[in-house]
Length: 464
Image (cartoon, rainbow, N blue to C red; front, side, top):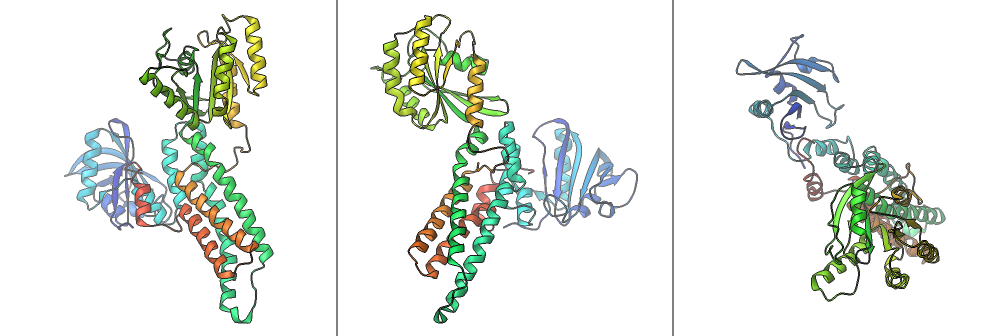
């Protein structure tokens, strides 16, 4: 899985800065650093210094001072990796960083692989696999909501739920397998009613965690919001207004937007991924039709759809368009955006509002060009994400690997429930329970392979 060699790496961002942090971890950490570090106050070796302290001194190269540094001391097993670890805070000169790394390598260390510090933390029992993956998510978090989910998982949110499920199942499957050893005596150790109740509860919990993936994944990567409508209704103008920049070309020529345009913006701590689509209309233009087809694909992939109409156009044309789109908005969080209210007749706007009510869609009156009522649109977006069956304390699944394992575990526990209703023998029940345990164990790393670990940690940055 990993070797015992002491590893080192720069843990701060590449390039020059005010300071840089270089990590060193392994059983030879202190002997290596003592050969190149001179404490300013005490001449005591770092190994003899107190843990969780910082020592000021100098790095010596060939008898000369390379840099003045601060060395943070962490002793096994009370460190991030579970090994003896130090972190050297040096000046951020690229020359200093590279020379210091070279010195450590000359002392016998080797460069860490991507994610190797976190991998060692996992292998040394400092965190499970789900928590290890959350470390990368915390680093990559681009919004408050993504950070909140990642931090919750790093602190063991999903791990605690999974471990409780596994422990309960392990107890019962042990009793069932014990029955098999006494099959000739026809004895029963596992209460089938209690087992059915437990499996049913586990099934509900697995389903809840699986269903949370859609929201968790959206909050982690950005909630996809597609803006759709006929040509020239103001979709690109709205995108530019939301982004506060001229991202999309705006013109009076129909069919200007021929491909999807995407960008992200963070609103009240939630990252939204806005998608401006090609105007949907009947056309013989091959390129435009390809853009329209992509618009339909984006609608299917989105969590929220903003259906925009031009309030100054023919009411009949608007009704035809909305009717044609109604089946594609099924089970989507959608709003009817009535645009250009600054130039549309009041009677027309009222009729469109009534139409929206008939379609059971929230209606937002807007002037994208004048940015009128943008606050109402933003409130709708925030409410669409926050409303639902989940609150801030609930565990949300945001990792695709976890989601796949939960789906497989759910299928296995369903077979257990079906088997109990059919009164099948204990050996078949035990087989399905163990399969469920296997997939739950995949999430936390209790069941893992070198290939799985390699795929997970290769995506980490070096130094973490």
